[in-house]
Length: 148
Picture 1 (cartoon, one colour):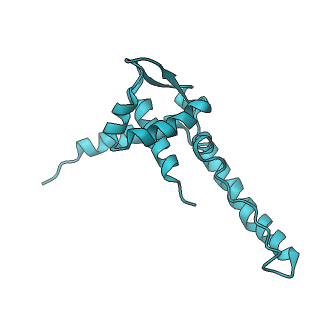
Picture 2 (tube, helix red, strand yellow):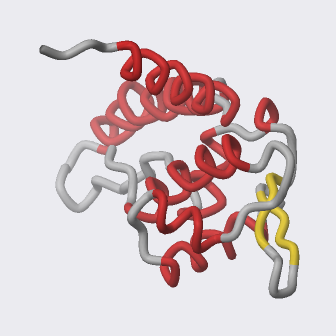
């Protein structure tokens, strides 16, 4: 599985928003600039996130974005679904490629369904709060590194 560019932008921008919107809303241009992203593309990403209720927008010249929920309640699964639809491997009929329909059923149930189940368990259990914490830990660790 590969995360789409849209999903990566969404996750990066949401980590940024989570870190930087503790006390005030954040302008989309600031998020784009800090993360070297196209503001126009990021606006498209945020339209999907806004529609899903993951972010809230504040209109006007001094507008910006806030998280639509507590970061502990925003899962990676919800973000991926908001911007790309399903993240699961889709069922594909293999009848055109095989004269034995049992093979298609076995592949679906023994491989694809199990991958989807595990992927869902994983993505439902990683929250934006987890990603923010990992980001903060990483930055803190790198600032303490001493290079010669």
